[in-house]
Image (tube, rainbow, N blue to C red; front, side, top):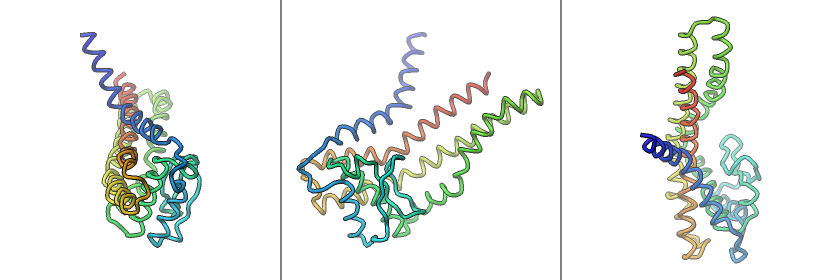
Length: 229
């Protein structure tokens, strides 16, 4: 039984943390500097934006992770992807520009994700406030049922966050394989022998939100343990 329990724990850890490790590993492996590439990730991003007629979309550095900000209409790249000459920098730049293209075209899936983020962006803060306040409220009212209901509400809100993360998957896969990959192939921005690596990076970029959803499961499991005891 102990062996089975250990195997179960290892499998659970692999499922929860494996995707995040894999994404970081793929980005790092293909993030090696390649002086032979014709340009940096930032240069490619600007070129692709202008080519798509999105001259008004800005390009900025960030330390908060590569992303497209639809509110500011800005593509933001990490320093290593903005100034780097690597397969990762090129693929990530193409992926984030693809989100700007989705936005500009008014694509339904992107609009749905944007609406979800806008309408439910408060969930994380409210859930954390409820969960952190539960011991204080219990100490005041001394009613176990109130504590249970409060924890259940907080955990339920975190569950909605998982649904939002999963709802972004079609948008992410379209950005990687419906737009970025065809653009890289058509424009020959990478040599043919670099395209398998680019596909790997684009696949990792598309699965980023799955990793985020799994980390939310860790939060829920932690609070469910508190709820049980």
